[in-house]
Image (tube, rainbow, N blue to C red; front, side, top):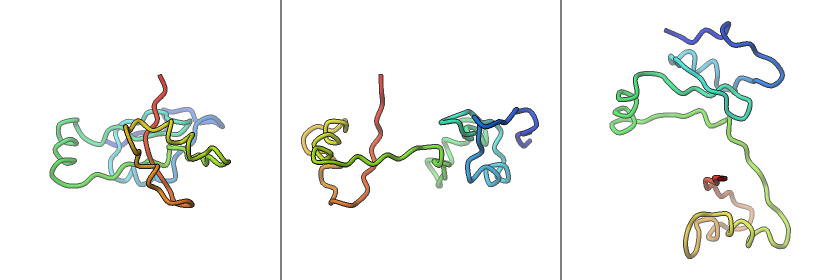
Length: 107
């Protein structure tokens, strides 16, 4: 059973991700809203999805995530304060001009 988009009222505040049609083709059964975008959260039952993650490979639509660039003379020190690692964080080992990814949680 595919998700019926006619059940969701869309507008300027709710967008599809660039991969929405692909998630439909591969059987997304449920979505949630994340950063004003439809984010697929279910393709199969939870146990089957977990088993597939452990035994095969899974692809996730992370286009709903946002990127920021932190610049300035204190950017390096500031980003080191944001990371959850003790000692020398992974971002601290990044070279200037390279990308660094880490999860940040408020709360």
